[in-house]
Length: 172
Image 1: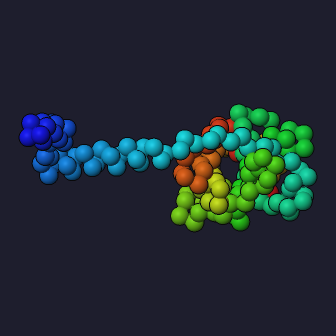
Image 2: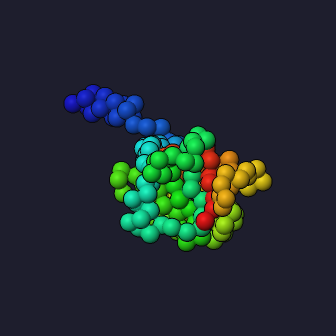
């Protein structure tokens, strides 16, 4: 019996973890926290904005001075506004995702762009960043100017879910 108890004591000592120094313990805790945080990062789910049609503009009364974003240098004369992916004005910006029109509020601290538009608009589900090369505009109509532009959409976790370069047509 004594031999069994002695053997079990040695076995327990061999199986137990060695004592860690405070620095080792802190490093182990930091590794465990980093692993938990990494497991909580959800990759962004890309979205594809849908064209804002003239019917949407009429329905939601989106008329007025501002800028409309069209991807990839698409002609401004696209039928029924079929190329417009975002509308921005001093009152707010609009994007359409999965058939739903989202209104985003202007970020007063962001850069001011042509016609009182802003460089950033915030909403519940998305933030819209509009980067317009204001010094490179070319007249495209009697009351409109086309600017090279970039549109970025970020989700509620501040992850980029869409980015596109194109034309921002600004006018009234």
